[in-house]
Image 1 (tube, rainbow, N blue to C red):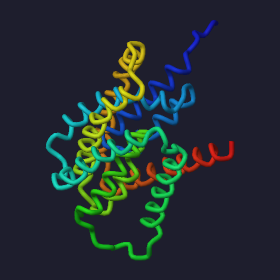
Image 2: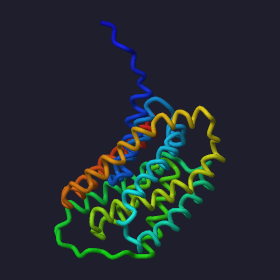
Image 3: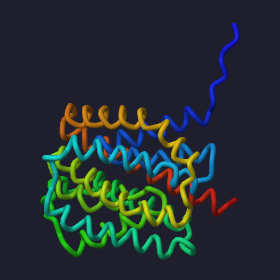
Image 4: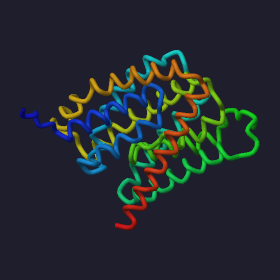
Length: 253
């Protein structure tokens, strides 16, 4: 029996798009794995640029799914800060090291998870939304999202201590990054103009992304709050370790 040849690129690209969809459905850390996975068959820069249309399409579905569930005060703080972070990323893209950004984000994510899991006082008070902290972490989220679609760790470091209801957390994440991704379209086009082939390649991946978005929203609503945030933190830890490993590998190569 002759087995049909399967294009490794198509498999990895569909997997990456599905992960993006899951992140927009309510599991934000998972989407950060998309660029590293697609980087197995293309350059990380090209992977980030090619995935942006997938993020934007998935954002639309995510906004509709969470159109009534979000934290308004956090949106007011994080959206302007995130857009400012995109502008900073665009202006500094030519001389900011991807290695340094990956290492910094990885260390922040790991430190946050370890602090959450190992601190003795497990009943620490819930933190309220805070403008100075929100502006700082929101700017960092926009900046790292522009560099490599890696805005989830800063967002989670700021929002997780607020202990929002899981659907509010998911909805706030989806809306914030929908605006950030929309703000990235024109700068990305200036840095690396999209070709017809790029857009066609992205269009093929839309079904996988939309399936992932619906699945992510379903899983988010079905899981208990405890397991939802455990999975979010576990995803943050895994992605953070991946970022650190990538940075160290680049430094040693």
